[in-house]
Image (cartoon, rainbow, N blue to C red; front, top):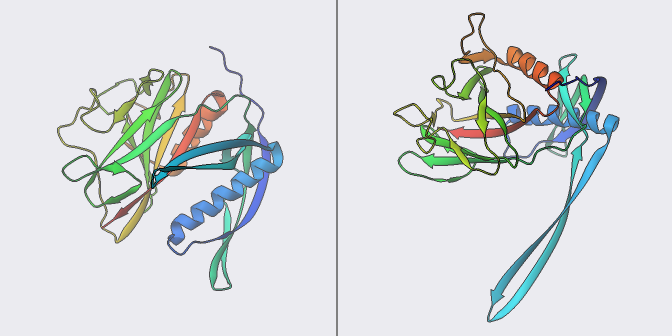
Length: 273
């Protein structure tokens, strides 16, 4: 299949982000920079408004009460391809609240296709048994990822460590594919990755998250495409089990430029000691 890369546009955006009391400064800085990038994309390409309606029925003393709620969600019509300069941040206090001013400049590309609605559920399986769907973990808790796509495609999982800046390949597993290609998934089928429910999981021990800090935030990165793609490899054609974030972003940039169906989902995981 021939894919023609689309033109990228240089964009800039800046925001003031009021930091919630329960958010760490490191996570707040990432959030502020992400919002600055999103604002830059929205100003250049616009947004799509999704309207969602939910209905809930409650039974009280034999009477049914129906609650109908509607909310709107904006989705930008483009993706951030790469930074053209290092994002800038400054911090100040207003009304006793920490405010982060973030500015970002980079290259963005307009989305010309409908985004695939992926189902990605992070599960904390505890230390000894299956747990619950959450992004919060304790040291040595087991993690698994429930994944489903409405279309056939290819997926890879990575995790970026906050304290080291390294990005680790979590799936496909190092024994799964010697050529380093992403995992093929069928449409409308649920997969559970990173534990023994996955028939291709090759390890005798579960996947766990660890930390020696009071609290640590890592980022789960899910890369999906309708086309097969190859992971970053060494010059010998072997898997790179871990790579610096800058090199990972360079690889991701190349994938997004040449594959218009590629999309990236990032989920922050909190690990407490």
